[in-house]
Image (tube, rainbow, N blue to C red):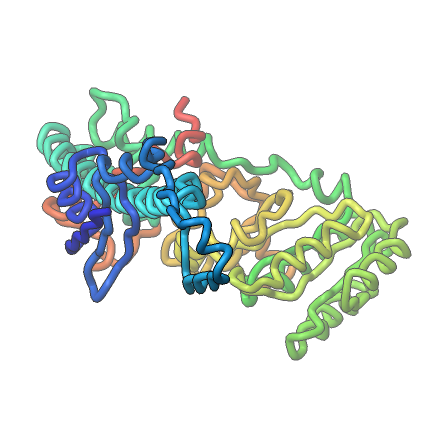
Length: 442
């Protein structure tokens, strides 16, 4: 059996050496890394065939030599038997099928190792191909946008306006690409504003909350204005139906003074504030308050990256009551942060959202971008601390106009003509974004 060893830097190079030396039908016996290189033991197919084939019957059954001993020998003396050898293998006892089976097992193991190595190599090749494809797409997108920028300069102007308003590069590029031909800069911007307004879902009046009533829980990370927004909503409910129709619940037992702040508002409004610690307490409280027209729940703030977010969503969903969750979105947060917040608090679905801290935001296109792409219903906007004056129904046309009036600092938001192609190239995969495909254009 002529087993040969081959070494190379990679499995692919080692297998190439095997094929060159032993042919394409060579059998791999082992494939393993040794001292930073790949070592392969291989056997030519002819050698395997000679081992696996049974020996000719003529060779297996040779006639035993006859013993010519005179009869008188038996009569005159006893012949001591010859001592048995320490290890003797009779020709007929050598089982070639067992050796062939062992070789077959070794070959199967070697083939599996070769397959695993080939699969790893294939995976690496596919990753390289994807990276090259992404690079090519980015470069082609950069070239295409450079050509568009020269041919239709008004699109570059509209793109700058959207980026300065806080809208994401991916949404901006998507709408710029869908922009109808033949429009000047002013007409193009009006078309963009119309599309953005059309894709903002708002409530037309407060009857969805104040008249229908129900159980509403304001959720979101810490510091987004949940308690203040709860107090503003409570004041509106009291003005519409009176204090006896409203109940307030707080789960904020962790933040120092958290529940005390809501108790002060409740005392001013003449409404009892109930404090709960867990799902069991909340379930009991909601059962006792089932005759109330409206129940507002002020929840403890939890970071969107905290695993307790899922527990809070589950607690509100499994109380036995139809708890509608309203997500408070901080207008001063970045687009990436707001997207994380929505994904964390989405759960089985949000009833809607409230834009908070509108008065503190340098731009609001970032939060409008998230509301549009996440298909959230916008209930209210909050622009101050006064209760209940600084809570307003969301006016989508006003919000879009405000987004383009509020401009970021020029040094931070203005891009040169040379930078815009690179920016657009970095969003070359935006067309695969499902949230963008669902944006209505007309």
